[in-house]
Image (tube, one colour):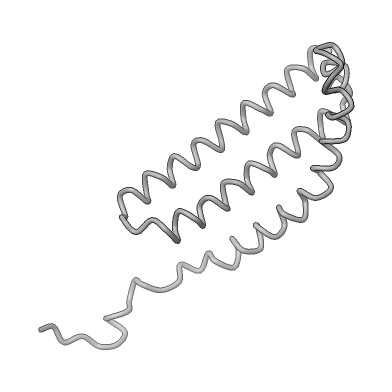
Length: 126
């Protein structure tokens, strides 16, 4: 039987002092996604059934390209943060949790970068 002080028993198990910043970032990205989603979806929905040329013309406009890039960056950051919370809360096996957190980060960075690259390619080729 080990005799430990109360401090020694709980040392290393407490807060990492990242919770408040993470919470605020989730709220800020949520608020930012409200107008960005509307600004992204309305022009995109108008061009949706009109073919490839309409989408090229839409994102050839610098404003629509900027909104699309901002939407993608904020949306994938918000998704990454939300999935991180779910993984940290519900996966108890530490090696599996670490693997899932790394995959979450890589997946969201890769998909976000692919989206930004696609919009940039359209915007700069027009």
